[in-house]
Image (cartoon, helix red, strand yellow):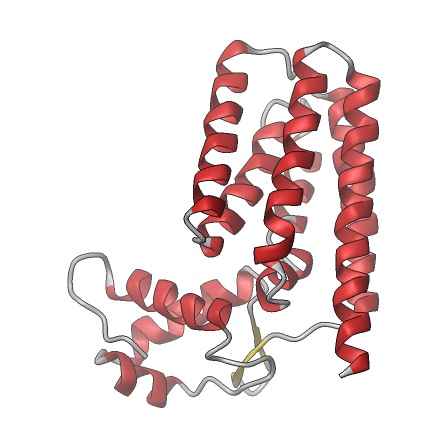
Amino acid sequence: MQRVIKKESLAEQAFNLIKKDIISGKLAPEEELPEKKLAQELGISRTPVREALRRLAVEGLVVLSDQKIARVASFTVEDALHFIEIRTLLEVYNLETSSLLKNELYEEIQENLDAQLKAITEERYEEFIDQDREFHLLLARHNPNPRLRTLIHTFNTGVNRAFLVLSNTLQFSAMEAYGEHKRIVDALEAGKIDDAKIEMADHMENIASRMKGYYLKEEEK
């Protein structure tokens, strides 16, 4: 594992380095993440490592047991599909109720789409994951219901988001997801909210299909 350098906070660097090793597959699903060992490998104390593991747990990449033992997360197809079902209900309804027709928001969304495409073409998939998440949060930013905004934020941080990282399918699915995002935005810019809702539902269904395909391949190994 790469050692940290002292520029950002130690916890921030530890978070990014451990996340990178999870995304790359160097740290396998269900692998234990002992604080002492990680601290030694990173060349820092256990305190920033502990903070980094907590942040990774919030993102769904790490699971913390009652005994405070950290492991790389793993998923069942049922877990993943249940989360997608809830996301579909939340995000389609969000398009129906949000105040989306704001020029400054569309500018941010277009910048986000550009950043998604750049990350894909440069094969920086961990950055694409962050931009993908931000895309869905931008769409919810002006929803008048703060609890709905919070739910969308939560379900874009948990199991389904981590699945995209841990399944190692991003190099195949990222461009498809980008195209789906773009079709949602094109419909919104045209004022076709019903079409945008259909595109969002299709996007969620496609995510579910990609997940099912991943698990099917795993079972065939």
